[in-house]
Length: 116
Length: 111
Image 1 (cartoon, rainbow over the protein chains, first blue to last red):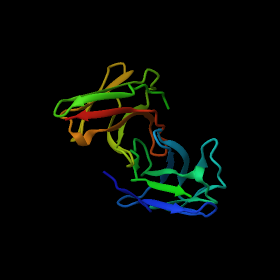
Image 2: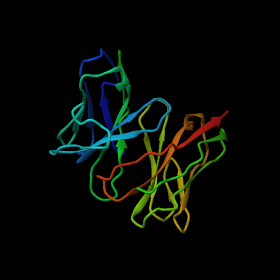
Image 3: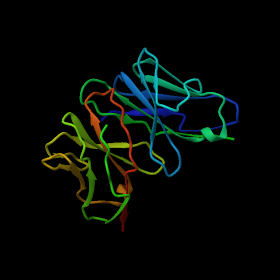
Image 4: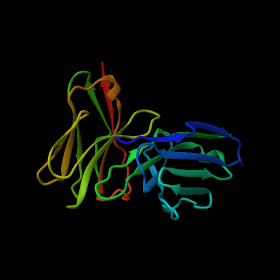
């Protein structure tokens, strides 16, 4: 299988600050990465799709100016939660795929964000 | 992506086979059936996927009906570590295709 890592695994920040979460594909090059958010006792909800070297595609209802996504290389995508508020507290998970047909997505371990 | 229907929860005795059903009656010809599981507070783990033939790997077996409208994930000898939420997902071809998660089945393996 393929390995996807996330950093940090958990972060606590004050309201109004920005937090950056990194997603890395460790043993493959990922042309496409996805960012999900999961609230307690709920399923994963897709936030956005990012392709290396191009702008991310956001799902309906996700504010692109609040959740900044950068996919500058084939092994790294970052999600920045700007001006975080307590309601942004959640479990953020990324996934990565090599691209091409039939390609499986592999998920990172997740980042737990708590905004005070 | 096609909608899937799974039972919200199931119990299975440790050491016995766990059979998790999934209905995907609107699946298209180019869509694969994927299974992932999520252990508490972790990211989803890929288990297995298939198009029309039955598939088996070191983790599980996937049985897809001939009409492809339903499938069953089989964990042959469930252990306590298999307790997780299992997601059945139908997804079109292409690594750029997003994965849409439903509510899944919460499998509880009982000692």
